[in-house]
Image 1 (cartoon, rainbow, N blue to C red):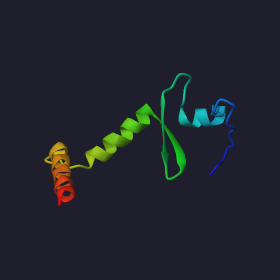
Image 2: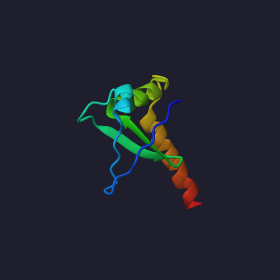
Image 3: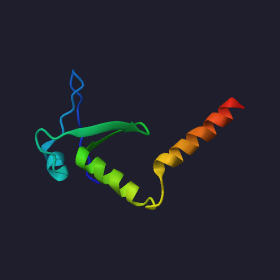
Image 4: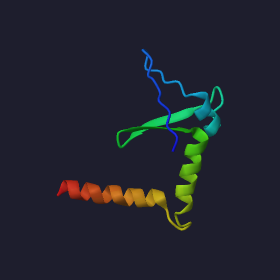
Amino acid sequence: MQTTELSVGKQGRIVIPASLRHQLAIEPGAQLVAWVEDGRLIMESKQQLWHSIHQACSKTPKKTDLAQELINERRELAKKENM
């Protein structure tokens, strides 16, 4: 694994070096989504994020009603809170 050190500027800006931008096909003006996971900063392009979401959803059986499952889970939690 190749590592690259980055610096955080005075205004909190991080510059992604050209070698990494090239490897990840990040073009000027690209939109990235960032979040913290297990104390790490994760950044992905919107396209990569949507691809990950679609892959995760494709594993769900077609007959599954995710909205109804969520409603049922919320109702069960509400019952437990009211006890």
